[in-house]
Image 1 (cartoon, one colour):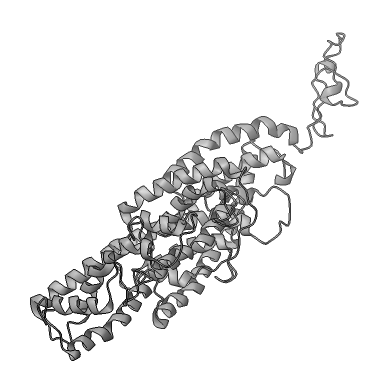
Image 2: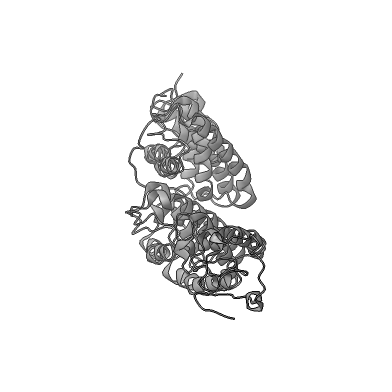
Length: 486
């Protein structure tokens, strides 16, 4: 049996205390309730609490809950204040929670029978209860992060999935676990509360790596991710799903250019603009910008420290992706000891081009160090290019240790490792350098031989000469480099 609009009006008037059960309400009182029924049902549908309700015919399962909600909406016209108003408000809140649980049964939208990753993420984060339909705003927060997440997985070569709906079902739960971590901060899950989500995402990535080669679906589909909006959500300036104001967006946008310039100067990533950035970088950029904007939005020191730590992790991820998104072309294939020395120092990552200033610090020490090694007979060539690549690598390790104190960012542990590697590198140079020794060899004459000439060492004969009675023949003659001494 369905309840009519008149039944609903009568129950609402009883709930607000205007009439007792069995009494007839006046036309004015009935009109005050009736005019609020349809707008309230439309509001419930808009907030995605429940849809498909008809005020003229209500199912018994929802009738009492709808009456409580409409009664709370009628407090003002009936002058209800104080404790009675609080009771009505609390009853309406409980009624909305009950309707959310019933919403799937009474929703006009038919179930699709497919895995809903957005709903799963929101349930895992505790935003909605199991079986409850999420709001459009909450769904939008998760949906906006799907494409950047898939692009990040593709860039790091974990798995290439065109879209979640087109992916193999065996990947759905793994993708949902990774997406849950990407959406945790906008829904106010930070600090130690993130640890379970981080662990689950790490396990999911490991599982996807195993099945990635079998389930590679090609290129990811397009999508849009608003980095500025994501920053405002991460900072709690706006609730997840609500658009930031023009002033708040301007605060974040003003920091985009300087942040990208800083990343470019430190050679973490060379990104011209957010619009031109690869989709796989956007989530990492939003984390870095969140830290850059934290003080502007009045975050305390503890929160700023936490955000700075997350930004540092994001920078590491950007460095790892820098070589893949670099649109430049390699210009040479020769071994560069200066570059290698900076890599040993940790100033640049392997394959990342060093800045001109960093190179200048190391280049200023190349020739002095080279001459020092030559003076100690560790290296006998006149030019570094005359060494083999193996020996140039040994020289680069020695050079790195020599330059370490010039870079304050080199930690003591790395410095100790560099210094410990110097003796072995010098030993390699000393043992092999004679092969590359370009110095002109000395020419000496036989100790017991004729005065008239000299011969290289390789042509000497060490047979004893015949004795002679001439005292002059006992004189030793040494010819050095064409000169003669008697």
